[in-house]
Image: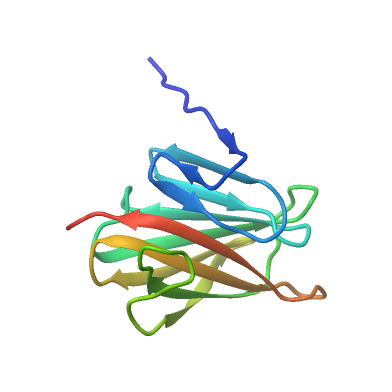
Length: 148
C-alpha cells in the first residue's frame, strides 16, 4: 500500500512544528520519507531544502538544496552557501554566531552540504543563491532540531 503525503499551502507562518519564513511569495511545506522538505520562491526561483535525517537531529545532518526556475527547470552552476544559527524564541534573534557552509553541486540544480547542528531547538537556515546570469537572492527557513 502506497501512502501519499499531502502538501499544504500555509497562509501564515506556522505548520506542525515547521516555520518557513520568506520575503516574497507563498510558502509550502511537506514531509517525505527522504526528509523534511521546505520550499520557498524568491525572485522567480524555487529553493527546496531537504534534511536528512528527518526530522533533523543534533549532530551531523545533510541539507540538500534543489534550485529550479519558474518553468521548473533545474538551475545548474549556481553558487550556493548556507548560514546557520540557532534561533531564540523570536525570529531574527540568535543564540550564537552564525556558521557559514558552502553547498557543493551534486548534479544539475542540486546542491548538498554536511552541517553540524550543535544542539536541539529552533534553527534558522539562510540559503544564499547566486545563479549564473541572475541577481543573487536568499531564502530563509526555520526548522526544529530534535535531540540526537
